[in-house]
Length: 428
Image 1: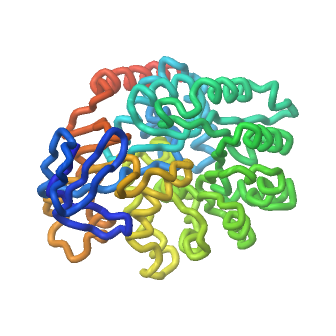
Image 2 (image 1 turned 180 degrees about the vertical axis):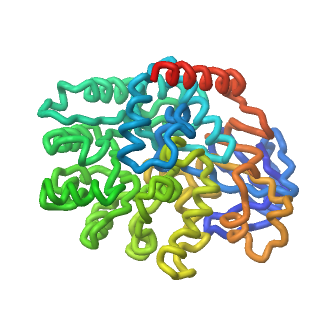
């Protein structure tokens, strides 16, 4: 495809106008202000449009689309124990399949080209991911409360099967990570075993870290150290790790994350909705800690719209710190795009640059809320809507365009997801 006469969000997060962007196979092959002589096939009229890197959801639980709006206005522990866990206990592969496809459709609609997910029923999820064409770093959730050996758990068998069948499947679109749900849902023995397994297979790791004050303080009471120090001591951070939330960090934890190159997947909407608090993102950014952006699940969000997440990410820390200079528009855009790709080990994506993978989103910027323009990056962060996305491309293939999903039967998926939710609620 050749995008002609289109504005682009360049790799320095400035906007350039009147550009031509040529996509060949799965990569960006040309960017310039002159029409290329090479034939790129289909031409896309970019008038009134802006091309930007596709967004990356660095922390999600995709099948929880079925729980949208199900556990409202509850504290985290009540939310989990009274609503989420009983519902999840009734899940099946038949329910998870449309739930995952529904989540992917929502992400594609809002310009998300890749996501990092932690859940169960992973093989069903993997098949849905590959069929859809989206990218994903998928991990099988692990919770263990007894003294079991890791090799005796269902998670170990699932992880081995996933790594053997799906690692780098779909020409690298699907990657398999290993997972520790959290300090409070596993044992030191299990953490050490997963850390060892991750090193053996050279896998990345996905965890929850210091999401709530009680989680953080109870870990200190149990182990005499913070969750970050605990995971570091047990070797988990020896592999590249994405740590979701990181709301309740001690001052000493920042040095650990910085030293170990841990990516923080900040989820401001979920953290606010569950009254968990505010991550100290400005301090993370000052220290050079990698910060990406995630939605968490729709059960605590209630959607997968990263434009909404980015807007809050760029605003909430100004209010929390009483400092209007923290989290610039460029930092917010980086968190929503290239930082997420880096957290997934995808150094070949996340920027509009020749040679990068063509993981792209096109926005209609000819809208009343995008005019006038005094600064384009400011408009993208504070004014743009997820619904402005009119095209989403992954590896050079258009997966969503102008209301049409190329790889998902959206009406069937919506019907099956509602039916699955109704069936489970009837059992509760």
